[in-house]
Length: 79
Figure 1: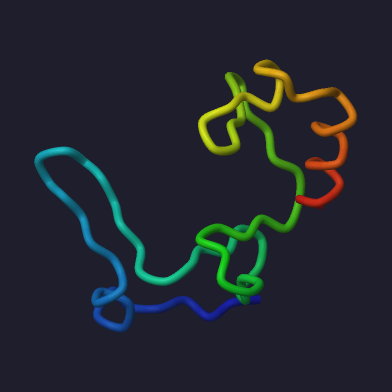
Figure 2: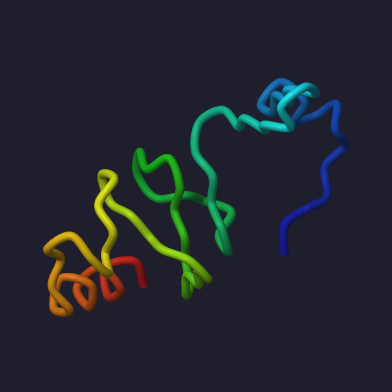
């Protein structure tokens, strides 16, 4: 289990734009992992659920010429 951190310990890695509500995180983000793999901006260990759409390079994995086999391969690759 990860150790809780004080904001002063991670404050240099997180930026918040108060006017837009955007949050930026330096380096990479790990979801369900404390050690993101490689140089990925986001590394998810587990199932990804979206109530709208998932896109790769602006192209929906559900539409735009991406086959069910491609979507299945993506799901396997993402774990």
